[in-house]
Image 1: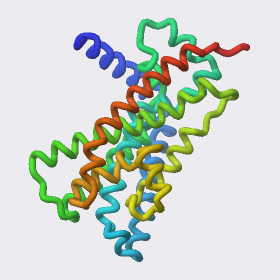
Image 2: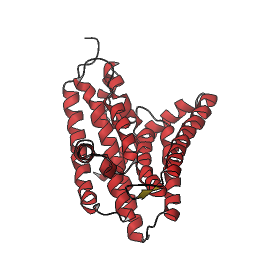
Image 3: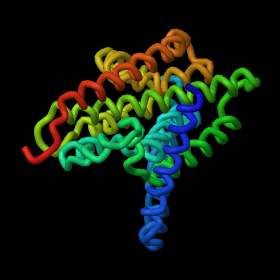
Length: 267
């Protein structure tokens, strides 16, 4: 079992190296991509800073606590874009019959699909999120210990798993859709913009949506709030591993059932 997973990890790295080479082939375009993707994320942080310079607190959350919350969201989004950007191409792969060549390879379909693309926008997001984490350490009242550092790493891993599974499920819906477009994944990302802010500012309907239907609360609100010592976070933190497991199982089932109905193109 371990040998097989090490082989998959090696194949993952080889696929991604080829993606990086293809992006770096045109150096001017590559450097412009790096600059503008990083600049766009800095602008997004500047907007939050301007907003909170005029509104010191929202529901007991100050600027640095909001940025700490946002960093969980940003880091997990960067993880998708850099390591699993192929999840965004599933609709295109289905409608262009790109899955045909994957089906004849002795490599798991899921591995080939997630490594179909890489995006350096994700690397910028993770780097910026890491910088915000470090700033949060000095500005937020968190009593750090080795246990809390370990807990932070676990929370970040769970956040990435949740975000990847959410996009994966939305993209796999393309197996059941007619046409070449699937806007569900873009809808999920757009909804995620609302997760930049504390869940408590929203009405009950949106709270339930973020907690149970589109579980962004488990991506950022519960882990960030727990580390900040906010009340009412323990139950959400304890449920997060179960939510991760559920989404992983659903993601596997979506791929299996989707491939069973895949008919290639030309029909």
